[in-house]
Image 1 (cartoon, one colour):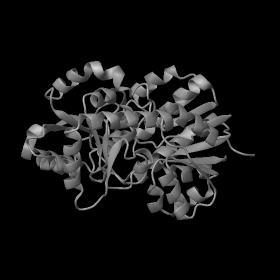
Image 2 (image 1 turned 30 degrees about the horizontal axis):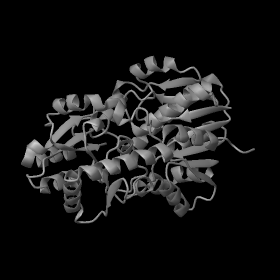
Image 3 (image 1 turned 180 degrees about the vertical axis):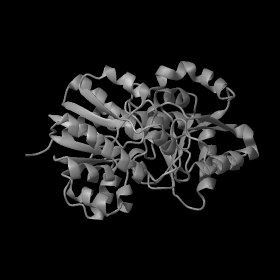
Image 4 (image 1 turned 30 degrees about the vertical axis):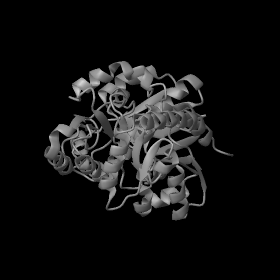
Length: 392
């Protein structure tokens, strides 16, 4: 079986600049190297580091699309809507593919329905859409037409699957939950560097460290989290480690990030910003923490950082947004309603867990057990390759 995977076109694969979607795609490519499920061509944005790294893959042919330094500048600084950038990426990719005269058993579009609509115009074949969020509900007519016409949809959670069904999609759709590399995200592997990372982040040995991991954008609830930490009495020795940036590597500071840092100045000794951290380095930072925090205020389509924190045996404070309740339950975390008391309830949850080490340990153990059983990388890859098999 020969398949073409069309990446979103925002970041390169291999995922040398990060990105949740890009990291998951690379997991699939790595799995295919050992299991040899099929021959894969992948369309991705050009990056010199990615090109050097791709030589490690024998069962994948990388089709790098180079759009110039001007494109990189515009993309990194969000100077144009992504839909416009999608058009440039797809059309340039199609030029390269047409020259190769390749034929594919199926074409997998990753998360950007506009890419799918454009590819359908010029490249025949069976189409699968891998949906990593529910943004399709606000897509324009072209994207909706693609989502209605593609042969199969793979969604990353029951929440996203439900949203497709609500939107009127009647064709084949299957849920394949994302998975975590439970060998990489294993606290025992990184515990020896806990104090080193704490020292690097200016955290005292006896502090109870909270960690937020993700993009610094309003919908992730990081501002509500900061306000919650500000409400915790000084007698409770907590510090919030904020890992991430406004987009991914090399992202500039947005107005929101500047406002967030200004808010933290009220009790600056309680907050530390790490900036962007590469995915394979995140276990080190989780190992330095005691409590994971993902208080999303939008409908989280999956919540990969939640699953990573649980794999690292951290109790989690999260919200009942989107698919998070599919991952977290009362045995491994505290799930909060998204209301006008969210920051206050975050503060109460922090105090509760900070004062009860046994509870943190019990929740952490239960969380890792659940991720290892239900949301591990091997299961994700196995189910994904089963899902792309097209019925005749």
